[in-house]
Length: 259
Image 1: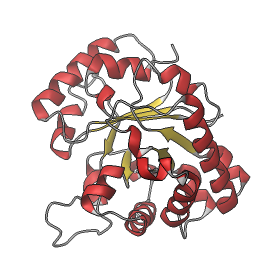
Image 2: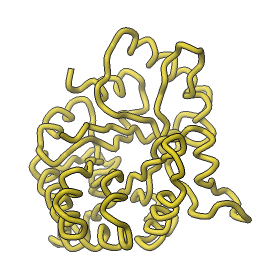
Image 3: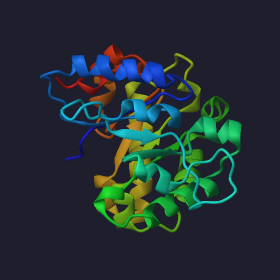
Image 4: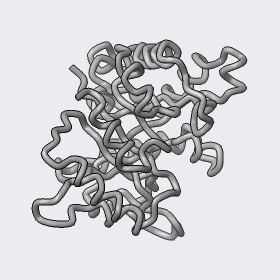
């Protein structure tokens, strides 16, 4: 059975001071509470230290990164390498978020290069970072009934050249671009339809066993008010959550949705 996974994507929000306050507020909310899903926060790089365990017996927050460069080091001003994230104990990294694609010209090819570099970097469980590969269609493509074609092309090109064992460990995140930060949300049935399609595409590429094991998140205005209906869908295994992850109370409700 696939374990649910919720990742809060802060984007360019919550600097070090706000992240520090978030940490302590979430720590209070989680006192004597049990969370039995996988979860993480993708904070800006500058805020990640503020989310690290503050005391020996303090709250451990699994960290995710919002992006990474596929090169080990070099003259890449403003970029962050895989080894740098490993030094932070980063557990996940979002690859190919729609905002990275639309605003910073990332392509399926560059996403593929990053995923391959991350997998190649694995030497032990201590430095294992799980790629969260994001994909999804624009509103124009959705209205033109091109969702299936777009999703298939993205998954085929982003995961090209990988083997089934590697793909089992990856998380993929379907995020309809028309539902990100717009207040619009795909209905549970719409989200399920494309997540099921995505699982079928993975089965075509890597076999049914891999498709049954890979976790598929939904990203697109998921919040405490709709998470239960979305998570009831058989092919939705979690959420890549934006705005609703910025406040500790809201994020706490998300990661305890099944309580």
